[in-house]
Amino acid sequence: MDSQPHDIFPRVSGCIQSSGIADTTAMQLLERYAAQPELQATLQTIFTTIEGVLTGQEKTVNDYDTEILRITNEVQDLTAKNTDLQVGLQNIAKNMTSPEAVEGKSLLADPGPFTGDEEDAVKRQKEYRSFVSLTYLKMEVDNHRFKSARHKIFYVASRIQGSAYTHIESFVNSTRINDPSLPQFGKWEDIFNIVLNRIYDVGDRKAASEQEMATLKQGNMLFVEFYAKFTTLLADLKWNNEAKVSALKAKISYEIKDRLVSVLPKPDDDDFAKWSNLISSIAEGVEALNAEAKRLPSRVTGRHIANPTANRQHPTTLTNETSDAMELDTMRLSAAERAHRFQNNLCLYCGKPGVREPASRPLTFGLCLLLYIVRSRDPH
Image 1 (cartoon, helix red, strand yellow):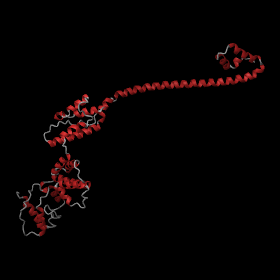
Image 2 (cartoon, one colour):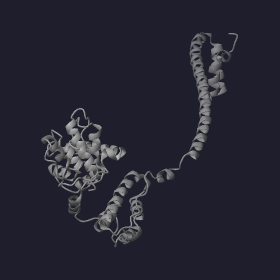
Image 3 (tube, helix red, strand yellow):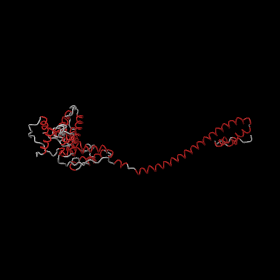
Image 4 (cartoon, one colour):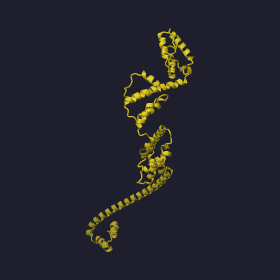
């Protein structure tokens, strides 16, 4: 063979040398390869196989090196991007509201303050109940503002001032210094439940509501305002639906009662919801008619006409129809009813249709018109 074994199998030769085998041993192996021709074929096969394996491993190592290089470059690229991202996050953080500021942002206005200085007991109680209601709402919506139960206690206490604060001052101080030997507030609701309710809210709310309900009348109030007061008092009363319906019908205005008479069929006496809806609907109509009457001239609504005297003597020669009409007129008409009759071509006195047209019922119209003129001049 012209070439030496270490030239034919460089990788095998290199492995022999790198494995720490003595040079003499390696040389002996190579010399046998050259000196014994009968071993050349066998050694040739072995060395060729080993050389092929080493070549494949070398290729694998090269592939790993290439992959490592690619991953290294990708890591460097990601590191650069991460650096840019961190810079961006820092810029965003600078423009964002701090967590402390977010935590401290209030969604509702502070309630109160409540001082308890109102001299009128009824007004003072209403002010107190309103303050308590607003405080509960505040603590529900802005609960995120407070880090602990103690902070809630101190906040609510800060909304109580004047003479009212003197009632809770000792509790607040003992809570602040956490003195176990003194009475303390365990939660903010204790401020009301333990102390203030007993001073500014009546012990028997049912009795107070019953007393106020007994004097409640709609009068000149809008129905919405009246109904709000009515239902507020009902919240403290354990009335059944039939009692609620009875009280509601008794306390509404006369105009609504008058309209209610003609409504058929009526809800059941124990169906408070349907009665409330029905009366509310009638009230809307009455109030809308009253509002419209205010815009009409006084000669239409009759607001300038005094109420006729009840003992006025009527002519005895009138027909039964006309006499009945004028008897009906002895009842005072509201401004809304006068406007209603005028707009619907109804007689301002008998309330029947067509009377305002002379051609339809001339005799009745003449009598009603004469009565209208006479009564409009009545100084009473």
